[in-house]
Structures are given as structure tokens and as C-alpha cells.
Amino acid sequence: MGGQACVLYGAAEFSRDLDLTILASPANLSRLRATLAELDAEVIAVPPFEAKYLRRGHAVHFRCRAPEASGLRIDVMTRMRGVEAFSKLWQRRVTLRVDDGIVYELLSLPDLVKAKKTQRDKDWPMIRRLVEADYFSQRDQPASQHTEFWLLELRTPLLLLELASAHRVLCRKLHKQRPLLRFALAGDLAGLDEALRQEEDAEREADRQYWQPLKAELERLRHARLRAE
Amino acid sequence: MISAEELAGEEQAEWYSLTPLERWRESAKLWEVYLALGGSLDPEPDTQSPFFDPEASGSRPVDGRPGLRVVRRGGV
Image (cartoon, rainbow over all chains, first blue to last red; front, side):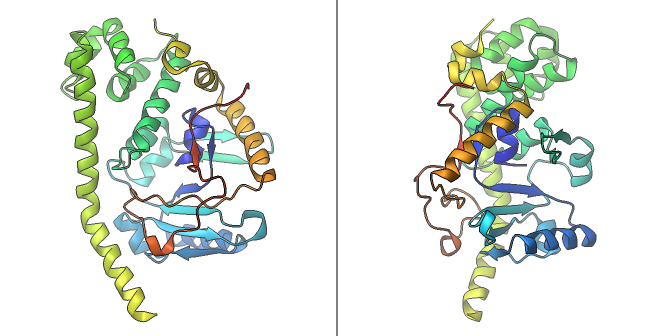
């Protein structure tokens, strides 16, 4: 769902860690435990690998010790801010079968973009590239859902101007959902640039707010771990 | 219409133009080179992450660079 998905969707060329989103059911967790055991993966940091933490929105972090994957970081999540429940994500997933027959189940691009709207600097250029890559690959023959997705998620001012000028009716329809589209309709590049910054700032702040109670819980778990050591 | 090359530069536009399967193949080649050069799988600490725990962070990678590369450096 993370860096590897960004590679396959065209926003990056290389990712060193592995992020998984899973359904935190007992059977699934048991299968994951068995796989992690094969990789000799240990939980690092807090929280521990328990369904209740995953369901509350925490990520569980592992580092592999098996020689063929030594040092590899695996992060596992079940819930992410602004993203629908796992069952919906699974319905919308993109399946990629590669040369050796391995199947990758990826978050759909719209879900990945939503999941990337975090407080971290590095996620925002990634979102921009994810949507740009999709735009350039589908621009010549877009389906209506593509155009709507781009109008709602593009972060490249010049492309938003281009798109708004080609799809004015849809742009007007969507501008209640994304107020900055009025700058795109007006051809106001400076206004659009500023509005994109404000949109990003608001999402980053929302992410910080979302994490506040979870971070407090992580802090309590860290202290408890230190006391136990 | 703005081209990908104008907007993002030739290397990135080239990456954009690939299919997911082609990107997977190219990324796999980079992995081979990276590992052959002794690159570490352990990503550098992500201090902006809400999960960041200084006590749990791994050592800095041998190449000192981020775990996610966004710019192409060679032909595809």
C-alpha cells in the first residue's frame, strides 16, 4: 500500500520498505504471523502486534532478521485516516501479476492518494506524482471517473488549469467538493497555487489532530515498556 | 496540452509512460544493483512519522539516502 505501490503507479522508482494493509481478522493475523515467522521478523517499537491496536488505527512495525531479507522493515496497518474500511479497499484493489507469477494486491490509486494525505513532507510530492502519472497515461482517452478523480486530486496547478478549461461543467459541479477549483475555472494560477498550499496545510493539520490521541497511547505504551525492562 | 516532459522532465516522463509491470521490472533491476553494491534494506528514521520512535530506529542506511526514490537516473 505504501512505497511499493508508489513505484508501480509511477510516482517513485524504488522503495526499500514494505507497507501492508490487512483485514485484522483472527485468521488473517494468524496467516500473517506465520509469514512473519518465516522472515524471522521481530516487532520493533510499540505497539505490540495485536488486533486491538491495528483496529484503533496504529501501525505495527517489524524488522526482518532472515538472511535474505535482513533489516527489511515491514509496517502493517488496518485503518488509515480519511480512507474507507478495509472491505471497501479490498473491493477496489488493483491486482498485478508479475513475471514470476507473484500477485500484488494494491490499494486503488484513489485510495492510495487519500492514504498519503499525512503530516509528512515526503508524502505530498508523492501524491502529486501519483496523480500526474495517471493523468498523463489516461489523458487521451479518459473515462468520466478519471476526469472526476483528477479534478478532485491533481496537485499540479498547470494541469488543473488545463483540465478545468476542458471540462468546465464537471469542474463547476465539483467545486463544492473542492473549493479551489474556482481558481482553476478562473484561470488564476497564483490563486490556485496558494489554494493548493492551504489545502495541503489543512490536511496535514487534520492528520496531526487525528494522531494526537494515538500518539498519546504510543507514549503510554513506551513508558510501560521502559518500566518493564 | 502540456506534455509530461515539459512538466516533469524527460526522466520522470519516461517513468510515467511505463506500465505498472514495466515499472516493476525496472525497479527489480535497481534492487539487484542496490543489493549488489551492499545497500541496506533498513530505511532511515522517518522523524515526521507519527509512529517515529527514536529508540526503535534502525541504523542509517549505508548510502545515506531516503528509502523511496522519485527521480530516474538512467534510460529505461
